[in-house]
Figure (cartoon, rainbow over the protein chains, first blue to last red):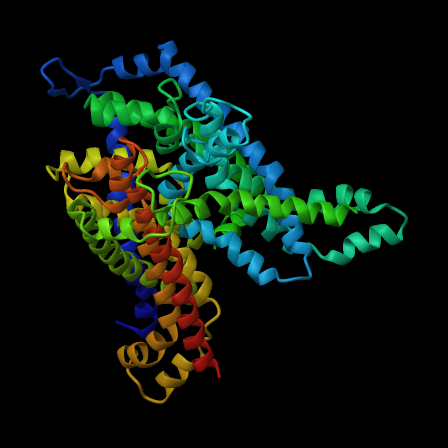
Length: 288
Length: 261
């Protein structure tokens, strides 16, 4: 074999284990559940292979599934907006801070290392019947009975915001960091106020970062089922909870496949739209 | 005026992020027998109790083994792939990169379902092996992103110098490239380990009955009520997943400094 041929083959040898893993553990299984979603779970519990539209008909027309899907998208949208409102000014502060930027950034990264389940359950210590807030209210004599603040939709959103906020801040920060600070100064020296300079120069330039953070927040919150189980009430199930129910509890795997694919289609469409307009570059910058 | 406002706002945002976690740590040292306020005294009793809880210790061993194996496999695959992407002119690089990071673009629930049902179809039931495969596939993209970012910064000259001085490609790799890669490999392994150690979304789908990892154990314990033991376990987890990477970061920086200096 010539040196050039070997040089050409080498990267493929290096890539093949990872590509094989992704192929066998992600792409083939995804194709498999597409096929599986047309099978039928019979009353005996066995799967009937074939081409049945029953699961899809149930998943797409049953108002129960539709309502929970819409509810999930609403929760994800609110979470994303709250993250943007809370995260943008913080990211702006870090990016423009002349103080200890490294420390602020390190603190921002820390939540990524703290277990999701612990961060989620930590709110029970704060808002629970015997949590910090109720303890304070009782001692101050403001209430005589502990308030029931947990296990509703707002606490689900609270938990999601707490989990996803660092993603938003980090993405906006990366975008702001890439903007030359002298642009704002130039706008000011040309007669605009600080606020005008921010609104017309910095904000538009940072929108790709805001969009990347928003996409992450939306997709990650729309795909969660743990937060509603820990911080939500019985009626706060999100779409991924239905998938979990169908697969783990009811063992109706063909239906579970159809429901998973529905979630994938909705969120995948969003990723594709994002990719079409903004490309994956910004997202990768934020992740890497 | 505006700047002060933004600073106060940022402070509130940081408080929001850290206060609940700080309360977990605080309550884990509570001497009271309920996992709640008020603090009645400082005590290690919940950590002692934790150390005697066989179910939690088992979960810890499972999580450690799973995280270590995941880190090993995922980093091996990830480093090889990153080398190819950074060092060679691969045709279709963008497509390959997208394929390799696809596991984080697919919602984890969907990935979990697809892998579970497909491997089950191949008669591989819920098992430690399935759990391991799942953890490998969703940590791989993160490893590739981290390792690639580090690799870009390592110049190829040293390797070429070794080759031109008569080293075989294998020698050059093990004696020159690999030591230079060490910080990247280390960062990748740490990242994969932490993600695996923290995971619950996929794990609840893949784990066989009776096997618990630390997060699923906490989740199961939450079903009852929040006990100080959970807070203590949370504190241990925070120490492990925050303290160890910070230590790792310091070590990696040191290694990089020594090499660069």
